[in-house]
Length: 38
Image (tube, rainbow, N blue to C red; front, top):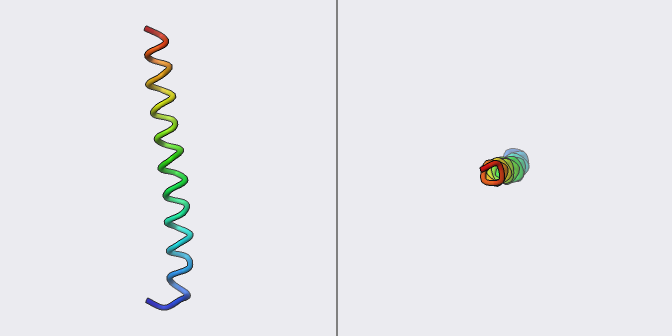
């Protein structure tokens, strides 16, 4: 793999990790709000 391709790939992986963590946080918040709502 050329270096020019590996750098954007790393950035994409980092963005995917950030977005996945945000999605998990949103799911946890929704589940918590549903539990509080009864």
